[in-house]
Length: 146
Ligand code: SF4
Image (cartoon, rainbow, N blue to C red; front, side, top):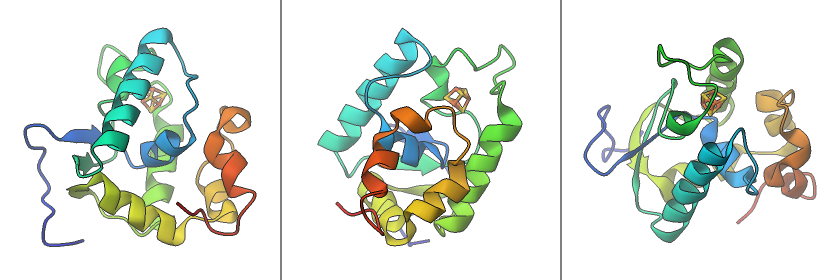
């Protein structure tokens, strides 16, 4: 963790659960609902345009889940145990700590450790594997590049 990080969400920051860093890399305009796709598209475009956007990384429902039909009225994901596993393994395999950093800083760390085998270990059973651009690109390379 670098000195620039904190454990709080500040104004203008985006909150992401750890495995959603990978989902954003693999997003190709498909998702659970039109509202969810719209949110993914907006957040993805914002982070591509402004890679210095601060991202508060922590397990649990996030700013993408906010538009997801799987988010319950109690404010949790109805696939909670599955997706918490993805979050835990993203943190562990990619050597990330929860906290706040610029989006491009998170992505640099992700790319340092992400291989096809690591991706499979993190979320190999994801129902979106067939549609995921990350899966398609990473299987061509030993390590995911820029
Ligand atoms: S399925 Fe769960 S973790 Fe994934 S976006 Fe929806 S609420 Fe969030």
